[in-house]
Length: 256
Ligand code: PEP
Image 1 (cartoon, rainbow, N blue to C red):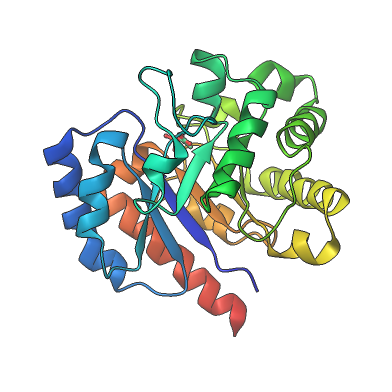
Image 2: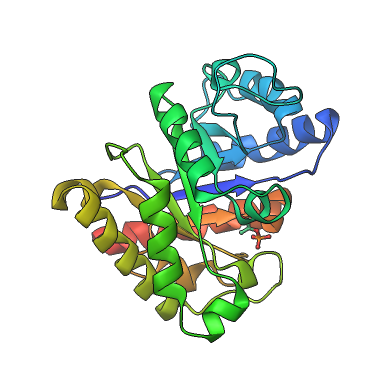
């Protein structure tokens, strides 16, 4: 049985004071919800403060990126050595990194290997553009991204994959639950091809793209979907708490 995971990607939002307030506002509510793993991914400058606040909490911390080198002349970058001890997860290959910072699958692959080497759990994002979706290329695109990003990686349950159709991110137009479920089942097949049946059954695969408290049930209720990567709604305590709560309720019922 895979434990559902809800991760909030705060992106380039919140200064230090706002991040501290946001996590303090959400912590008691989220700590009271069980049967779901909960992660917040604040901007780098707030990671340390959020980590301190969450000591002793079940709410976990993730980073939004890392550099694949350990240290050196890479001005402005953050190395895995700076993240270990501060966070458990790291989002890699987000479509905004691919689009605005020219991150290729090869770079994502290097970052993923580095994250695993330093004990950080990657949340690997894959997903197709609108034109690719309209041309029926979703499976092809996602398969290509997965195979290239996971090249020569020994897979384990530490890997999390997020299927995030680019046309659904920040647009308010979420994918349809049935379609997302089908893509995620396909992703699990590919992970099986790249590892083993038992590993593929342990890897959690999330849906991401305009998830809110009004549509989470459509995704969390699907058999292949193990939770969500949430952007905009993760900045609103009521929304994020409700998303986690509803996911926990669905998980409870599916175990009955
Ligand atoms: C994201 O940034 O990964 C994301 C899914 O954003 P949103 O929920 O705002 O679409």
